[in-house]
Image 1 (cartoon, one colour):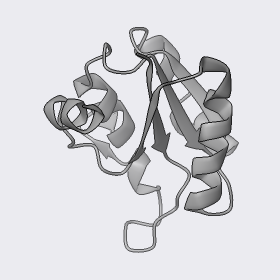
Image 2 (cartoon, rainbow, N blue to C red):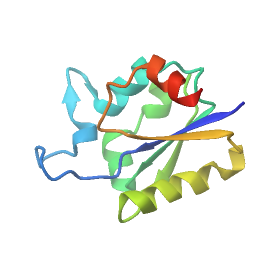
Image 3 (cartoon, rainbow, N blue to C red):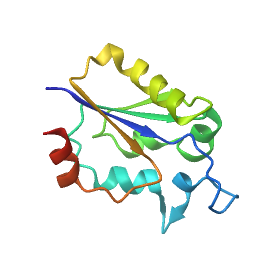
Length: 121
């Protein structure tokens, strides 16, 4: 069974430090997305689609595929709102034909592998 993850990372946030979107805020030497991927079991998802603005990818995630070779990462363009971004992510996964798709907010990096597996089951 193929599971896919859509990681929504296109938002700008309204209540956080305006100098950097929350999902790219560094704690120590990694941002929230890197922290999430470091703690994510690479065997849970056969593909991970990160949905974001192109400028964000070039500015904050240039080496992400190289830094996380065990996660099959794909990128899709963010829409004007969360709904459109989610749809863009789903459409980009069509060629992988996943059985299940989970959608998660990149600014929430503390979800556990145990919880993810429970949701999938």
